[in-house]
Image (tube, rainbow, N blue to C red; front, side):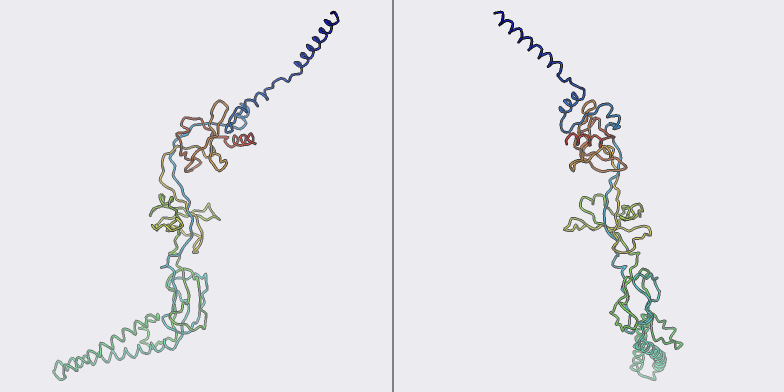
Length: 386
Protein backbone atom coordinates (compact mmCIF):
# COMPACT_ATOMS: atom_id res chain seq x y z
CA UNK A 1 0.00 0.00 0.00
CA UNK A 2 2.83 2.33 0.85
CA UNK A 3 4.38 1.64 -2.55
CA UNK A 4 1.14 2.50 -4.40
CA UNK A 5 0.70 5.74 -2.40
CA UNK A 6 4.26 6.73 -3.23
CA UNK A 7 3.68 6.15 -6.96
CA UNK A 8 0.49 8.22 -6.88
CA UNK A 9 2.36 11.07 -5.15
CA UNK A 10 5.16 11.03 -7.73
CA UNK A 11 2.66 11.15 -10.68
CA UNK A 12 0.76 14.09 -9.13
CA UNK A 13 3.97 16.08 -8.70
CA UNK A 14 4.97 15.52 -12.34
CA UNK A 15 1.54 16.71 -13.59
CA UNK A 16 1.65 19.89 -11.48
CA UNK A 17 5.16 20.68 -12.69
CA UNK A 18 4.04 20.34 -16.33
CA UNK A 19 1.10 22.71 -15.82
CA UNK A 20 3.31 25.32 -14.14
CA UNK A 21 5.87 25.14 -16.98
CA UNK A 22 3.15 25.49 -19.67
CA UNK A 23 1.70 28.61 -18.02
CA UNK A 24 5.08 30.28 -17.83
CA UNK A 25 5.71 29.72 -21.58
CA UNK A 26 2.22 30.82 -22.81
CA UNK A 27 2.52 33.87 -25.24
CA UNK A 28 1.23 37.14 -23.88
CA UNK A 29 -1.23 39.26 -25.99
CA UNK A 30 0.54 42.31 -27.43
CA UNK A 31 -1.11 45.58 -28.50
CA UNK A 32 -0.34 44.65 -32.11
CA UNK A 33 -2.19 41.37 -31.93
CA UNK A 34 -5.13 43.09 -30.23
CA UNK A 35 -5.27 45.64 -33.05
CA UNK A 36 -5.22 42.85 -35.62
CA UNK A 37 -8.18 41.20 -33.97
CA UNK A 38 -10.00 44.57 -33.97
CA UNK A 39 -9.27 45.21 -37.71
CA UNK A 40 -10.58 41.79 -38.53
CA UNK A 41 -13.91 42.90 -37.08
CA UNK A 42 -14.16 45.78 -39.69
CA UNK A 43 -16.08 45.41 -42.94
CA UNK A 44 -14.34 45.23 -46.33
CA UNK A 45 -15.15 48.93 -46.91
CA UNK A 46 -13.86 50.23 -43.56
CA UNK A 47 -10.42 51.29 -42.44
CA UNK A 48 -9.21 52.31 -38.97
CA UNK A 49 -6.23 54.51 -38.15
CA UNK A 50 -4.61 55.31 -34.85
CA UNK A 51 -3.90 58.86 -33.76
CA UNK A 52 -0.34 58.80 -35.11
CA UNK A 53 -1.49 57.58 -38.54
CA UNK A 54 -4.19 60.23 -38.74
CA UNK A 55 -1.65 62.94 -37.99
CA UNK A 56 0.86 61.60 -40.52
CA UNK A 57 -1.76 61.29 -43.29
CA UNK A 58 -3.14 64.75 -42.39
CA UNK A 59 -6.68 63.43 -42.43
CA UNK A 60 -9.30 66.17 -42.25
CA UNK A 61 -13.08 65.88 -42.25
CA UNK A 62 -15.90 68.29 -43.01
CA UNK A 63 -19.54 68.29 -44.06
CA UNK A 64 -20.98 69.09 -47.47
CA UNK A 65 -21.67 72.72 -48.29
CA UNK A 66 -23.68 74.67 -50.84
CA UNK A 67 -21.91 76.47 -53.66
CA UNK A 68 -22.87 78.31 -56.85
CA UNK A 69 -21.18 76.52 -59.72
CA UNK A 70 -21.53 76.84 -63.48
CA UNK A 71 -21.78 73.73 -65.65
CA UNK A 72 -19.10 73.37 -68.29
CA UNK A 73 -19.14 71.18 -71.36
CA UNK A 74 -16.40 70.59 -73.91
CA UNK A 75 -17.44 70.18 -77.54
CA UNK A 76 -15.15 69.28 -80.42
CA UNK A 77 -15.24 70.32 -84.05
CA UNK A 78 -13.29 71.88 -86.87
CA UNK A 79 -12.97 75.11 -88.81
CA UNK A 80 -15.19 75.12 -91.90
CA UNK A 81 -15.49 77.61 -94.72
CA UNK A 82 -18.99 78.79 -95.49
CA UNK A 83 -19.85 77.96 -99.15
CA UNK A 84 -20.53 81.59 -100.09
CA UNK A 85 -16.99 82.51 -99.06
CA UNK A 86 -15.27 79.89 -101.24
CA UNK A 87 -14.83 81.55 -104.62
CA UNK A 88 -13.92 80.00 -107.96
CA UNK A 89 -12.24 82.33 -110.45
CA UNK A 90 -13.21 82.13 -114.13
CA UNK A 91 -12.50 84.23 -117.22
CA UNK A 92 -15.45 85.82 -119.08
CA UNK A 93 -13.84 84.94 -122.43
CA UNK A 94 -11.77 82.15 -123.88
CA UNK A 95 -8.11 82.67 -124.55
CA UNK A 96 -4.52 81.98 -123.56
CA UNK A 97 -3.32 82.45 -119.98
CA UNK A 98 -0.50 84.96 -119.53
CA UNK A 99 1.36 86.31 -116.46
CA UNK A 100 0.05 83.75 -113.98
CA UNK A 101 2.03 84.34 -110.78
CA UNK A 102 -0.15 82.94 -107.98
CA UNK A 103 0.08 79.55 -106.28
CA UNK A 104 -1.78 77.76 -103.46
CA UNK A 105 -1.25 79.58 -100.20
CA UNK A 106 -0.75 82.99 -101.80
CA UNK A 107 -2.45 85.82 -99.92
CA UNK A 108 -4.43 88.05 -102.30
CA UNK A 109 -6.46 91.22 -101.89
CA UNK A 110 -9.77 92.00 -103.50
CA UNK A 111 -9.12 93.66 -106.88
CA UNK A 112 -5.57 92.31 -107.17
CA UNK A 113 -4.58 91.14 -110.72
CA UNK A 114 -4.15 87.38 -110.85
CA UNK A 115 -3.37 86.77 -114.55
CA UNK A 116 -4.10 87.93 -118.12
CA UNK A 117 -6.19 86.35 -120.88
CA UNK A 118 -5.07 87.02 -124.44
CA UNK A 119 -7.25 86.38 -127.55
CA UNK A 120 -8.17 88.01 -130.86
CA UNK A 121 -11.86 87.93 -129.86
CA UNK A 122 -11.07 90.51 -127.22
CA UNK A 123 -9.82 92.84 -129.93
CA UNK A 124 -12.83 92.05 -132.12
CA UNK A 125 -15.28 92.87 -129.32
CA UNK A 126 -13.72 96.30 -128.86
CA UNK A 127 -13.84 96.97 -132.58
CA UNK A 128 -17.49 95.99 -132.73
CA UNK A 129 -18.22 98.33 -129.86
CA UNK A 130 -16.57 101.28 -131.57
CA UNK A 131 -18.31 100.47 -134.87
CA UNK A 132 -21.75 100.25 -133.29
CA UNK A 133 -21.10 103.38 -131.28
CA UNK A 134 -20.48 105.28 -134.50
CA UNK A 135 -23.60 103.75 -136.02
CA UNK A 136 -25.66 104.90 -133.03
CA UNK A 137 -24.48 108.47 -133.54
CA UNK A 138 -25.52 108.29 -137.21
CA UNK A 139 -28.88 106.65 -136.34
CA UNK A 140 -29.58 109.36 -133.77
CA UNK A 141 -28.94 112.12 -136.29
CA UNK A 142 -31.07 110.36 -138.88
CA UNK A 143 -33.87 110.07 -136.35
CA UNK A 144 -33.71 113.79 -135.63
CA UNK A 145 -33.78 114.53 -139.36
CA UNK A 146 -36.75 112.25 -140.01
CA UNK A 147 -38.52 113.71 -137.01
CA UNK A 148 -38.15 117.24 -138.40
CA UNK A 149 -39.26 116.19 -141.90
CA UNK A 150 -42.25 114.39 -140.45
CA UNK A 151 -43.15 117.51 -138.50
CA UNK A 152 -43.06 119.43 -141.78
CA UNK A 153 -45.06 116.60 -143.39
CA UNK A 154 -42.21 116.14 -145.88
CA UNK A 155 -41.98 112.37 -145.18
CA UNK A 156 -44.47 109.71 -144.23
CA UNK A 157 -44.99 108.49 -140.71
CA UNK A 158 -43.62 105.13 -141.79
CA UNK A 159 -40.22 106.61 -142.60
CA UNK A 160 -40.12 108.36 -139.25
CA UNK A 161 -40.99 105.14 -137.38
CA UNK A 162 -38.36 103.17 -139.30
CA UNK A 163 -35.70 105.70 -138.33
CA UNK A 164 -36.83 105.51 -134.72
CA UNK A 165 -36.71 101.70 -134.75
CA UNK A 166 -33.24 101.69 -136.32
CA UNK A 167 -31.95 103.99 -133.62
CA UNK A 168 -33.40 101.88 -130.83
CA UNK A 169 -31.88 98.68 -132.23
CA UNK A 170 -28.46 100.27 -132.58
CA UNK A 171 -28.65 101.76 -129.10
CA UNK A 172 -29.61 98.35 -127.64
CA UNK A 173 -26.74 96.68 -129.50
CA UNK A 174 -24.34 99.30 -128.17
CA UNK A 175 -25.62 98.79 -124.63
CA UNK A 176 -25.03 95.04 -124.91
CA UNK A 177 -21.51 95.47 -126.24
CA UNK A 178 -20.76 98.00 -123.51
CA UNK A 179 -21.83 95.46 -120.87
CA UNK A 180 -19.58 92.82 -122.43
CA UNK A 181 -16.68 95.28 -122.46
CA UNK A 182 -17.18 95.97 -118.76
CA UNK A 183 -17.22 92.22 -118.01
CA UNK A 184 -13.70 92.16 -119.45
CA UNK A 185 -12.67 94.85 -116.95
CA UNK A 186 -12.18 97.33 -119.79
CA UNK A 187 -13.36 100.91 -119.45
CA UNK A 188 -15.48 101.69 -122.56
CA UNK A 189 -14.62 105.37 -122.27
CA UNK A 190 -10.94 104.55 -122.76
CA UNK A 191 -11.72 103.06 -126.18
CA UNK A 192 -12.73 106.45 -127.53
CA UNK A 193 -9.07 107.30 -127.83
CA UNK A 194 -8.33 104.17 -129.80
CA UNK A 195 -6.76 102.32 -126.83
CA UNK A 196 -7.70 98.82 -127.92
CA UNK A 197 -6.38 96.09 -125.63
CA UNK A 198 -5.16 92.70 -126.83
CA UNK A 199 -5.69 91.04 -123.45
CA UNK A 200 -7.70 91.46 -120.29
CA UNK A 201 -6.71 91.13 -116.65
CA UNK A 202 -8.50 88.78 -114.26
CA UNK A 203 -8.78 90.24 -110.75
CA UNK A 204 -9.40 88.59 -107.40
CA UNK A 205 -13.08 88.98 -106.44
CA UNK A 206 -12.34 88.67 -102.68
CA UNK A 207 -9.53 88.94 -100.18
CA UNK A 208 -8.19 85.65 -98.88
CA UNK A 209 -5.86 82.77 -99.59
CA UNK A 210 -5.48 80.90 -102.86
CA UNK A 211 -6.33 77.25 -102.22
CA UNK A 212 -6.01 75.80 -105.74
CA UNK A 213 -4.61 76.83 -109.15
CA UNK A 214 -5.62 74.28 -111.81
CA UNK A 215 -4.23 76.48 -114.60
CA UNK A 216 -0.83 77.39 -116.02
CA UNK A 217 0.75 79.94 -118.32
CA UNK A 218 0.11 79.28 -122.01
CA UNK A 219 -2.94 77.13 -121.40
CA UNK A 220 -5.95 77.81 -123.62
CA UNK A 221 -9.02 78.05 -121.44
CA UNK A 222 -12.79 78.35 -121.87
CA UNK A 223 -15.11 80.46 -119.67
CA UNK A 224 -16.23 77.31 -117.80
CA UNK A 225 -12.65 76.40 -116.82
CA UNK A 226 -11.64 77.22 -113.23
CA UNK A 227 -8.48 79.32 -113.08
CA UNK A 228 -8.11 79.48 -109.28
CA UNK A 229 -10.05 79.03 -106.05
CA UNK A 230 -9.82 81.51 -103.19
CA UNK A 231 -10.96 81.16 -99.59
CA UNK A 232 -12.09 84.27 -97.79
CA UNK A 233 -11.24 83.79 -94.09
CA UNK A 234 -14.17 86.02 -93.15
CA UNK A 235 -16.33 83.03 -93.98
CA UNK A 236 -14.59 80.67 -91.56
CA UNK A 237 -16.83 79.12 -88.91
CA UNK A 238 -16.14 76.72 -86.10
CA UNK A 239 -18.55 73.82 -86.47
CA UNK A 240 -18.96 71.80 -83.26
CA UNK A 241 -20.62 68.44 -82.70
CA UNK A 242 -23.23 68.57 -79.95
CA UNK A 243 -25.03 65.46 -78.71
CA UNK A 244 -28.57 65.49 -77.36
CA UNK A 245 -27.56 65.84 -73.70
CA UNK A 246 -25.37 68.85 -74.64
CA UNK A 247 -28.14 70.84 -76.31
CA UNK A 248 -29.43 72.20 -72.99
CA UNK A 249 -26.25 74.30 -72.77
CA UNK A 250 -26.29 75.43 -76.43
CA UNK A 251 -28.19 78.44 -77.75
CA UNK A 252 -27.70 81.23 -80.29
CA UNK A 253 -25.73 84.09 -78.79
CA UNK A 254 -24.01 81.88 -76.19
CA UNK A 255 -20.32 82.61 -75.67
CA UNK A 256 -17.69 79.93 -76.23
CA UNK A 257 -13.95 79.66 -75.63
CA UNK A 258 -12.09 77.79 -78.37
CA UNK A 259 -8.64 76.26 -78.05
CA UNK A 260 -6.45 73.65 -79.72
CA UNK A 261 -4.96 70.51 -78.21
CA UNK A 262 -1.47 71.81 -78.97
CA UNK A 263 -2.01 75.14 -77.15
CA UNK A 264 -4.83 74.69 -74.59
CA UNK A 265 -3.71 77.76 -72.66
CA UNK A 266 -4.51 80.07 -75.60
CA UNK A 267 -8.27 80.54 -75.74
CA UNK A 268 -10.19 82.55 -78.31
CA UNK A 269 -13.59 83.94 -77.45
CA UNK A 270 -16.46 83.29 -79.84
CA UNK A 271 -20.24 83.18 -80.07
CA UNK A 272 -22.78 80.62 -81.30
CA UNK A 273 -24.47 81.95 -84.44
CA UNK A 274 -26.77 79.06 -85.34
CA UNK A 275 -27.72 75.53 -84.29
CA UNK A 276 -28.85 72.81 -86.66
CA UNK A 277 -32.07 71.40 -85.17
CA UNK A 278 -31.85 68.12 -87.08
CA UNK A 279 -30.26 65.32 -85.05
CA UNK A 280 -28.20 63.00 -87.20
CA UNK A 281 -28.36 59.22 -87.01
CA UNK A 282 -25.12 59.26 -85.01
CA UNK A 283 -26.89 61.25 -82.29
CA UNK A 284 -25.33 64.67 -82.77
CA UNK A 285 -26.06 67.94 -84.53
CA UNK A 286 -23.92 70.87 -85.72
CA UNK A 287 -23.37 74.07 -83.75
CA UNK A 288 -21.96 76.97 -85.81
CA UNK A 289 -19.74 79.50 -84.05
CA UNK A 290 -18.00 82.69 -85.10
CA UNK A 291 -14.65 83.42 -83.44
CA UNK A 292 -14.14 87.06 -82.43
CA UNK A 293 -10.39 87.40 -82.80
CA UNK A 294 -7.67 86.67 -85.32
CA UNK A 295 -6.06 83.33 -84.68
CA UNK A 296 -3.68 80.78 -86.12
CA UNK A 297 -6.42 78.34 -87.14
CA UNK A 298 -7.45 80.09 -90.36
CA UNK A 299 -7.14 76.92 -92.41
CA UNK A 300 -10.38 75.03 -93.03
CA UNK A 301 -10.27 71.63 -91.36
CA UNK A 302 -8.33 72.71 -88.25
CA UNK A 303 -9.58 70.72 -85.24
CA UNK A 304 -10.53 72.69 -82.12
CA UNK A 305 -12.17 72.25 -78.75
CA UNK A 306 -14.72 74.67 -77.34
CA UNK A 307 -15.69 75.21 -73.73
CA UNK A 308 -19.26 76.33 -73.09
CA UNK A 309 -20.23 77.59 -69.63
CA UNK A 310 -23.85 77.28 -68.49
CA UNK A 311 -25.84 79.26 -65.96
CA UNK A 312 -24.75 79.05 -62.32
CA UNK A 313 -26.82 77.04 -59.87
CA UNK A 314 -26.54 76.32 -56.12
CA UNK A 315 -25.69 72.69 -55.38
CA UNK A 316 -24.17 70.58 -52.59
CA UNK A 317 -20.47 70.08 -53.22
CA UNK A 318 -17.33 68.47 -51.86
CA UNK A 319 -13.71 69.28 -52.67
CA UNK A 320 -12.63 67.40 -55.76
CA UNK A 321 -9.82 65.69 -53.78
CA UNK A 322 -12.39 64.16 -51.41
CA UNK A 323 -13.61 61.86 -54.20
CA UNK A 324 -11.58 58.79 -55.16
CA UNK A 325 -11.98 56.49 -58.13
CA UNK A 326 -12.04 52.74 -57.52
CA UNK A 327 -13.29 49.95 -59.80
CA UNK A 328 -14.64 52.58 -62.23
CA UNK A 329 -16.85 54.12 -59.53
CA UNK A 330 -16.65 57.22 -57.35
CA UNK A 331 -16.31 56.93 -53.58
CA UNK A 332 -15.88 59.11 -50.52
CA UNK A 333 -14.79 58.20 -46.98
CA UNK A 334 -17.26 58.89 -44.18
CA UNK A 335 -16.19 58.86 -40.53
CA UNK A 336 -18.43 56.09 -39.13
CA UNK A 337 -16.95 56.22 -35.62
CA UNK A 338 -13.89 57.62 -33.91
CA UNK A 339 -10.81 56.93 -36.09
CA UNK A 340 -12.83 54.59 -38.36
CA UNK A 341 -13.69 55.55 -41.93
CA UNK A 342 -16.18 53.87 -44.25
CA UNK A 343 -15.82 54.01 -48.04
CA UNK A 344 -19.22 54.79 -49.61
CA UNK A 345 -20.22 55.20 -53.24
CA UNK A 346 -21.21 58.71 -54.33
CA UNK A 347 -22.93 60.13 -57.40
CA UNK A 348 -21.09 63.11 -58.86
CA UNK A 349 -22.09 65.85 -61.26
CA UNK A 350 -20.38 69.05 -62.37
CA UNK A 351 -16.90 70.11 -61.32
CA UNK A 352 -15.96 73.78 -61.06
CA UNK A 353 -12.91 75.43 -59.49
CA UNK A 354 -11.91 72.35 -57.51
CA UNK A 355 -15.39 71.48 -56.19
CA UNK A 356 -17.61 68.64 -57.41
CA UNK A 357 -21.39 68.49 -57.28
CA UNK A 358 -22.89 65.64 -55.23
CA UNK A 359 -26.04 64.27 -56.87
CA UNK A 360 -27.16 62.20 -53.83
CA UNK A 361 -26.54 64.70 -51.01
CA UNK A 362 -29.28 63.34 -48.72
CA UNK A 363 -27.27 60.17 -48.14
CA UNK A 364 -24.44 62.19 -46.57
CA UNK A 365 -26.29 65.09 -44.95
CA UNK A 366 -24.64 66.09 -41.66
CA UNK A 367 -21.99 63.36 -41.90
CA UNK A 368 -18.29 63.94 -41.42
CA UNK A 369 -16.60 63.34 -44.77
CA UNK A 370 -12.86 63.07 -45.37
CA UNK A 371 -11.95 66.14 -47.42
CA UNK A 372 -8.19 65.66 -47.15
CA UNK A 373 -6.30 62.37 -47.22
CA UNK A 374 -8.97 60.29 -48.97
CA UNK A 375 -6.43 58.78 -51.36
CA UNK A 376 -4.28 57.67 -48.41
CA UNK A 377 -7.27 55.85 -46.93
CA UNK A 378 -7.95 54.19 -50.28
CA UNK A 379 -4.36 52.95 -50.47
CA UNK A 380 -4.55 51.52 -46.94
CA UNK A 381 -7.88 49.88 -47.70
CA UNK A 382 -6.49 48.30 -50.89
CA UNK A 383 -3.48 46.99 -48.97
CA UNK A 384 -5.81 45.44 -46.42
CA UNK A 385 -7.82 43.84 -49.24
CA UNK A 386 -4.67 42.40 -50.74
